[in-house]
Length: 214
Image 1 (tube, rainbow, N blue to C red):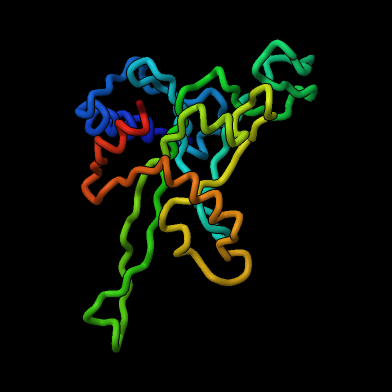
Image 2: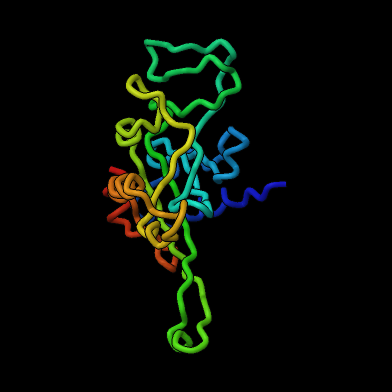
């Protein structure tokens, strides 16, 4: 049985951080209806009547950054492209389809990494290693999700999943498939515009949140 306590953790984050910044939970935090989304702690809720889809990025051992899936199930087996809709639908009934531009206002992605840090007093002779946690949130508005082709719209078919690169991504590896590619760095540059850090006490700069949610 999957532990779904992450719903309560995110609700606490909203109450402790977002509500003091002036945001109200106008639709309660619920589990994403796609069962596979539990791998990415998929949730849905609303803040100040803005519809939000939430995911937690999943670290992979062979590549920098974190991966997440954002998709839904087709409603019927006879879906085709609808020219009057904002979504491009597939013909195959079991194939995951991207979220549509009309379904959400923001995509929130929490990322976390544990980077090894040497204890200074032992570094010269017998180094021991401790882990320092790095956390943060990407807050992507629907406008950038449309522009980058992440959600389904008249111009793009959308993506079922994609990778995010927090500020510390360049710390992960320097050989083989762990190389932080130039395309990854290019993606990171536009993504960091929408990133806000979570400090060691679990606090977020309310001014940064306000800039991204207004």
